[in-house]
Image (cartoon, rainbow, N blue to C red):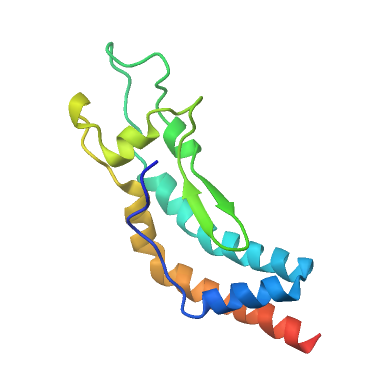
Length: 142
């Protein structure tokens, strides 16, 4: 799978992850995972709105169904990161070809996930900063 060309880096995140590993606090790890998911969920509506709907033609693959690409957009979060994915091998196998292009099939790239992240990056950063600060503050006070 192709590596994402759009990434948001957070200063001090490596130190925070190292401290979390040393603490071995499951509740804190779960809270950080929820913060990652909350921040990534902000991108999901924009990505669904801008995902190409497409249309069936007589030459379309039997597996192609308009609207499935947008419906397949999901967020997967862990303590270390959050990823926004589109498509699956069984239900939407053409997602990679649509997003990254497929020159041999004359499919031009439509990087709707990257554009959605670019449009919402300020809001994602603000939300992440606010939420992670609240989690750390709660942990320090308790």
